[in-house]
Image 1 (cartoon, rainbow, N blue to C red):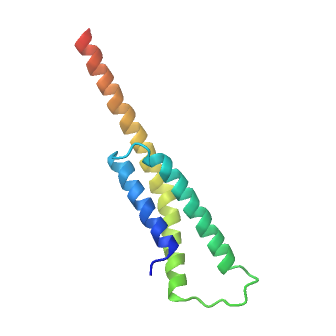
Image 2 (cartoon, rainbow, N blue to C red; image 1 turned 135 degrees about the vertical axis):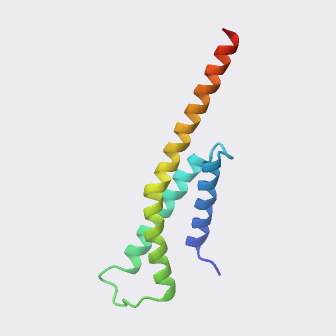
Image 3 (tube, helix red, strand yellow; image 1 turned 180 degrees about the vertical axis):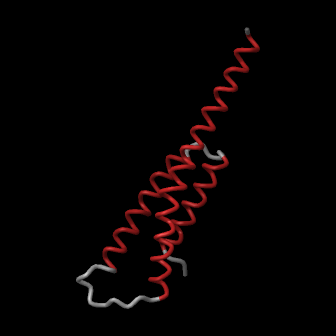
Amino acid sequence: MKSFYEYLTYVSILLYLLVLFGVFQYAPTYLIYVTSFIKIYISLLLIYKYNPFNKTNTLSVTDKKIIFSSGVYLLLTTVIGEYLLYYKEKFQNTIEGNIEMQVNNLYN
C-alpha cells in the first residue's frame, strides 16, 4: 500500500509536467499549494519521528525511504521547481510578445 507521501509526490510530478508542457493553465497555482503542503508535511513528519525526545531511534526501510526521498524532493522543488516556474513565465512572455509584434506588423 502506498503512503500518503507517495501520492502527494505523484501529484506534484504530474503538476510539474503540466507546467512544463503548458497543458493546464492553472497548474502553476496548484503546484505552489501542493509543494508547500508537501514541504510542511515532510517537516512535521521529520520533527515528529526524529525529535531528540523520542526514545526509539531505529530506522526501518520505510523511514530510510522517506528520509531519502524527502531530501531529494526538497532539493528538486527548491532548485528545479523555481526554475521551471520562472522559465514557463519567461517563455510565455516571449511568445505573447512575438504574437503581439506579428499582429502589429500585419495591421501596420
